Length: 283
Image: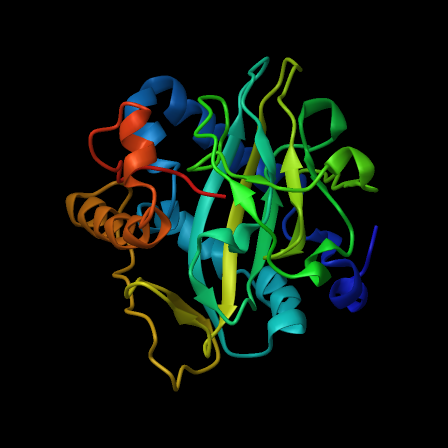
């Protein structure tokens, strides 16, 4: 739709080829099999920072095709701040409300790009991501929290803008393609009423000079050099879902949730959560 050269103007770029369809299908099959065999563990694993549990996902986030594209937007010194799956099963009501990623992340300056990799086709029929082109240029706008049960965002946050008055565009991708989007673009997605799953892997990249407000989180150096040292380095996984891998994963979520939910304790308690979940997914 829009090439990377127009990212600054539009706030997104796609489609960008990352892997062939058979490679994407193989990853998708592994994910669905794990979900079927151990749904409780899969729900925890496929939330935030899944790459800290699977060596194969650490390889994905460092693929040249991904980093080459991100480098064109953010420069040559890159950190991966977080990564997570957005999985909509067949005929499910899960959705993502219209929002800006920058609302609760606590990263400054807002030079953050999400690479959204489709492991299955992602289209209007099965609830692909939609954006408001150019909305990232409006700066940070107000949001309100809903904590909706079907909302895939951690706080169910919604942008205080009437999207019905906006021009939107669907980010339709084939399996193995990805999109890039700016941290402040308005975006969301509808449920998946089809008979097949929609699986996306979202990777959030930042240049090394970006800082974390509200605490010290983890970030992985994936390209170039880091002269700033604003983040701790995570231990990378050596095996799938090992004991030390889970410990690293949970520590990363504990630190990240302390930032993400810093002013939301009362709201989560109202929803019935007596403590913050370390397996929460965020936008």
